[in-house]
Image (cartoon, rainbow, N blue to C red; front, side, top):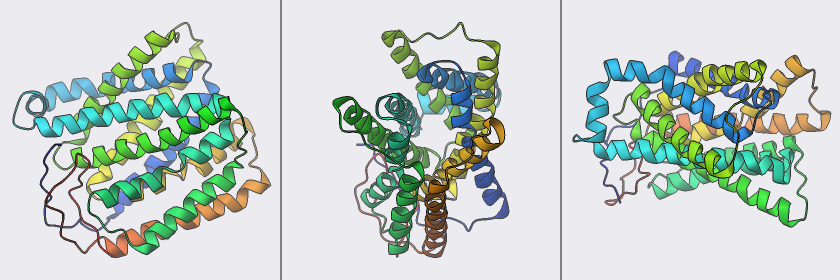
Length: 326
């Protein structure tokens, strides 16, 4: 296991720029599902292109301004942090490779509900890191996940195909939590642009191999599909994922995982405005429950995040730099 050191200082308080970055990130990732639905291309190919083009956008800046940092992560004295970036990219690729196919196997409703278990996995990872999450945070996680399930109207079909899709969706939520936890650890000392460039690059490389092995076509799309992919790069990838990675220095991974659940109502609003798809009335109570859970988690984390607890002597690769107590 990779050793880590945990600084004794708790996270600084949230400031308006951090809150604004979180709000912008939620809006950006909310555009992902409508754009993927609009793009006439395989989901895994879309995931590959959005990561590769993000690296193409960030790479020149990193090579020009962060070359010393990048070299230190590869062959210098910060190879440990470099491994966190690489493992985070692998986890992100695993999230895309499990979550996207699950939609076609078990259906959108069930897959959306099961991938919404990410905050639960994030909470368990936090416990493994030696952090004691307040009861209010656990309660908020439960309420928000229940709201996501209710809002999606999950209908789990009983069949081998649907069961395989269910397992893939749960795995997608787990890998999303691992990706966020590893990113939290990498962002202790690695700049946002360097971390995201390495992470997205590793993710794109893995997805390229998956697409080539699986015979997924990577080209021949209509111009409108390429425009949708470019919009995904600028919105969900560079503004969404990257801003969430940026604020990991100030906001715990558990809180971010719950905030990401706001993508569901955000995507519904965008689909309403873009495609004219009105949200089902039966989904409104679930969306309200989800919002309540998010508020409980955020408030519980803010109240408890200023006090530290002793960290265990040994750490895991997912060890966070911050400490949270009841």
